[in-house]
Length: 169
Image (cartoon, rainbow, N blue to C red; front, side, top):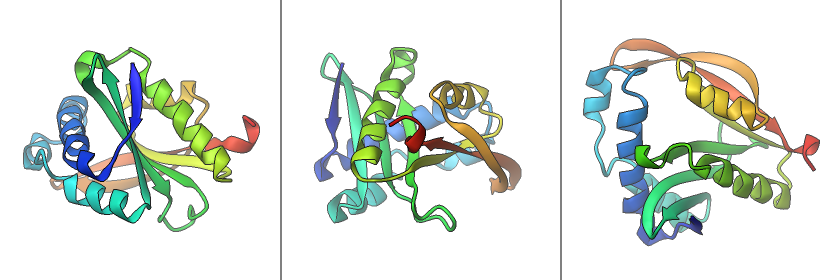
């Protein structure tokens, strides 16, 4: 397995990985109406703009030269978390689940966070996403606040997870 830093020209690929993984991963947690509204190129403009500006970092995992997963992270823009390194998501294509890609992504992100003097990494996880929550807890993240939001008119909840980088230095 190889992890590569995404370049601006990889924006379409990152969006495609996000789309395919989101459709599969969230089918039990988000309304079908919401998932049906997602598009393969939906994340491409945001990823392209973020990578181009240098504000967003993305990694792509390859297994035998085939894209297996992607992750993006940046300095948080969320109120109250401005000093955190915000992990937007880790998306793995289903056939590459349980191969350690998520762990390898987190190792890279932790190293980036420490090198760039972030004291914490934070992210949101759907409350119902028990496998995702278990993964982050196993990786040392601690459950924080909970918020509700609407996805296709269905109220759902998300939980903030925080990793204190000071404790792992």
